[in-house]
Image 1 (cartoon, rainbow, N blue to C red):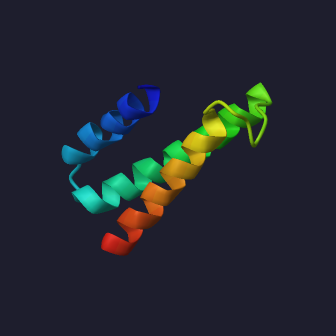
Image 2 (image 1 turned 45 degrees about the vertical axis):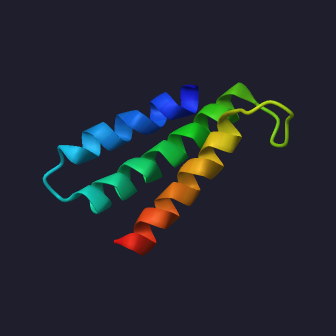
Length: 72
């Protein structure tokens, strides 16, 4: 649920960007990747945990960033 909402926010902001949807999505996914990594480091979350945490979100945003980079 949390990841779905966090995924919806960059898509909505990217749809109103003037530089194009692909470029703005790539930038927003890259910033979300960095933000999730910093938050996970600050909270000292375990890297491979049973529950989903910010490290998993970071990996998902990184994959989405790579996907939008190849589609651009």
